[in-house]
Length: 398
Image (cartoon, rainbow, N blue to C red; front, side):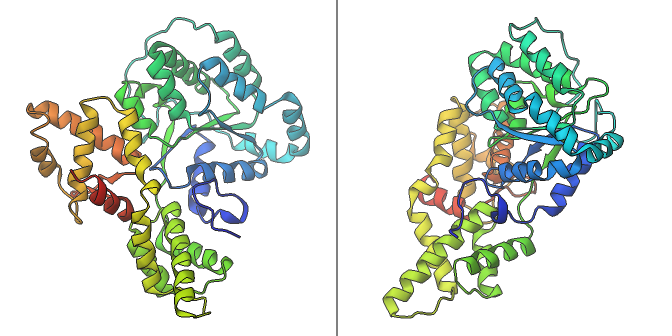
């Protein structure tokens, strides 16, 4: 079975996340959730696994990808079509006992929670949008029903809507918030996306519209989980690998993202195969040199990483684009990272005003943290992925 790269991992290709799933099911009893975290951590794969587990919890779950949707009416239509009445009736009949257990465990959704997204700014009433009737019909049908709405790529959808019509986007967010805060709600929302929702909302000053949701931050694999996944994946490919070699692969990767771990493992298997062909060896055992060779090969393949820069060039306007790219160039030069003070000094040429420079730095760092470029949560700011750092150093250090 080939190592899956970049696509949603399901079935036997999904690894670990046991504690995260347990935490999410517990949180969903009382709250709606925003699943945040850097790109390439497997958020969509986790949503799919939750969808697979939902019936055992008494919930009918649907995973709705809204990336290709362009307006609120289509957003509600996609939710409506994903949950036809026949499916709901069949679920209620087949899972009656578990539905009863879920409803018994259900707690009233909290309006404000510690760790929620956003602050406590007073919301202002908005004019009724033309799609209100459609939204209300969907809301009335699903609110008393034990369903889990897993809304993926909500940040991509919202960015398109905000760029086209910010007022309409705000009306949608207000309507969804009102729905989530309805008394006695049996359904639950879980929102996620490949670009940072928190940074997007902060940029448009709309964080209040998600301050009723629990912000669940997904992190990288723990080392034991990473080693277990790599060992099983290597075995599936008929390659033997000692724990020392797999630990070396983890060390070269740095940030234990499932995607980057699998990317380097796949390249290591290819390097080992080529080494065997060159030397005439038939032994299928990964060596340290295979991992190092694979690392260099990946860096030479610009197509693996160029989209990281292209996204920033596409999504950011000047002067924030140049500011953000200058931050990445500065951080890429230092293996041990840089401090905020060092960054502020190096960015003086782009913004002379100290207060403006500090504001732009924090705005850029929030984006780069949420989208998986940098780790900003310690004194020294570093690239998360060593592969991405070394690619950036080689190609975009100017």
